[in-house]
Length: 315
Image (cartoon, rainbow, N blue to C red; front, side, top):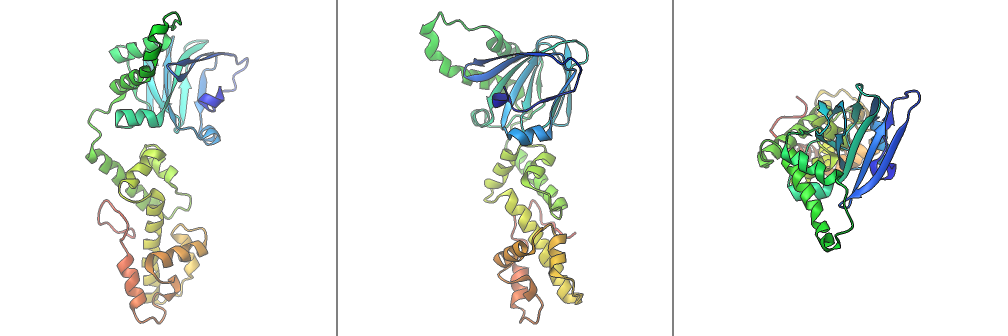
């Protein structure tokens, strides 16, 4: 089951028991799960274990449950349909019944996003009163007979039907146009501006804090001719250049390695190589009896990183 669904961690209840039936629904991996766990999680550790990137479409068959996902707390009942992001932690809580029953459908992220033209957000819920919810559950749960081979050729179009139903359920309230993308990009840049000195900050961390997937974050930067990793490195180098200029003016003699570490670099050699590549001079040459050309090249290179505004990183 983990090959298709990844890692999940049930609570260590005594006498844990479950029943699993895996199947295929129009080419999608599907599962019918019954278990007596009152709480089940997909943790950050589970996510790192399998590194899966897809969506889960899940629905309880009986009773009421609570799902915590993407900073949302969703109370659901039988017939509701919930979209979950495999790259984000999720918690299932089913306290009201002895045995929870769930249906799940695994949907390829890239195919769904390409078909819909937007990236649905995990944690969204389609209520059972919605026609699309009822149609989706009917398609997924009704047994398919093999007695009608004449219609087998139509099966290749059925995944598109599933995608369209998911689009109807989980489309954002407003079109995902350039204004929305610009806001997401600005949010990511603000996170980097505030956290670039943290050596542990990475594109994955930025995506998690921005509430979007890593893939979507990279697309925001790619369409602007850059990458998130390059933006983080550029922010660090810009700030380091300002500190080195200040060091030269005040003649404090602060070790350059201290400046590198304060800007989020773990390795001085990596910092010095990046500094020379970006500004055309070595960090130690700035203000060290130079003719001014080195200092000018550093000042000219500052700010050559995509920003949502003209704000400076050292403010």
